[in-house]
Every structure is written in structure tokens, then in C-alpha cells.
Image 1 (cartoon, one colour):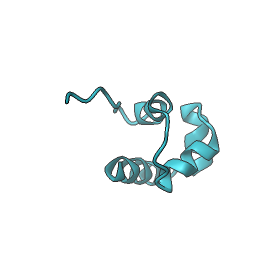
Image 2: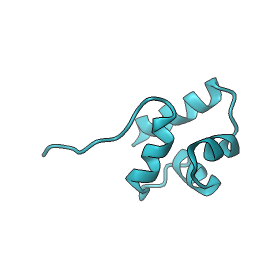
Image 3: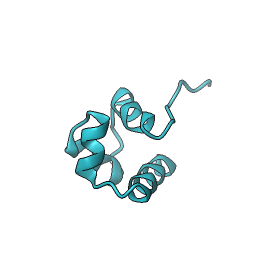
Image 4: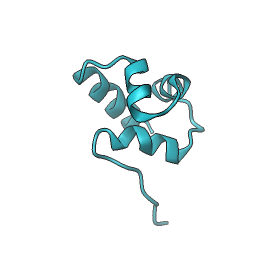
Amino acid sequence: MQKIIEFVKNKRKELGLTQEDLAKRAGVGLRFIRDLEQGKESLKTDTLNKVLKLFGKTLGPVNL
């Protein structure tokens, strides 16, 4: 999860976006972005994918 957090935070900063800007563009709540960047462990995958989609990425199933 740490790599995802770093990826989102770095991309957001590269693009000069505030957390609020990112939330609006992704169609998610500001609280979700704050929780994500602070490392909250229980985040909804579908909501996370809305954010990652802005950067051309998505999470997929894991084969065990």
C-alpha cells in the first residue's frame, strides 16, 4: 500500500494539484484523498481506482 500512497502523492504534486483538486478531478471526497495519503488501511478499491485512473493506472485482482 505504501507504494500506491507514494505514487498518488508524487503524481499529484508533479501536476501541481492540491488534495482538493485531485478529489474533484477523480470524483471522490477530499476525506478519501487525505485518508489515502495518510496511509489508512481500509480504503475501497473502486474508489481508489477512480483516483488511479487519472494517472493511467488501476488495481486488479491478486492471484493467490
